[in-house]
Length: 297
Image (cartoon, rainbow, N blue to C red):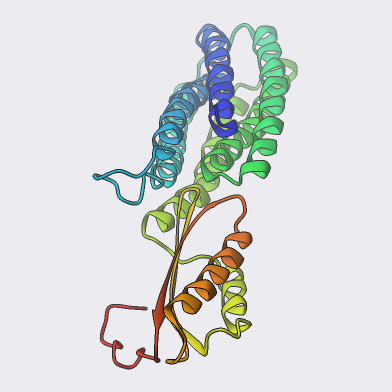
């Protein structure tokens, strides 16, 4: 099993455990903050299960129906995760505002505090594990999952502080105010996840620093005289690069092919942790002006 898939199994198991603990205490205590945290963990569980499905699907080999594979399942999962975070935040915001106008006395304060302490420890360990996997694999689904649980860690800490303050002061309004703050923070943190996923689904080009590295490889290759129509995109863990390389008209097809292989190998080394797909069009002359009416950037 791939490391990324193992990470989703771990996060799913942790989320399931936290749902049971938080939901039980949240319902009994009547705390909006704890209940909001429980709902967030429930959504974490659903998202982690979908992430496993997405990773399992994205690694399937290309076939007659999907010639370029299913790599876009990964950014799709990231967009859905960001959307789920935002929707859960809106629900938390709604519940917090309702409690401001219709206050309810909280119970089981000691139990609630202990639950949040346990949740913080478990979530912190999970975040450390997911960050480690994200660094090793550079997988955007795992990075999104790590960021998601990191927001949970901050929100759980805030809930713990609020419950402690309520326990000693008896001021119930703190719970609702914290609920509003958590909701706003969750919406804010979900935006980068959604943005990155949407850009990848729209076939955004690689970052400028990667483009420069690719161009340097092309410029430093003595076997070609020029290049044009460099195009790049990223689809999950896959990198796609297409370029027209201009060769001297007298070069043999065999020698031109060797130069193209050399260029491909150099470009693949730039993305060792990705599956790189490179297409090099071998032109005997610069046809960029002839084809300038084609749909290119």
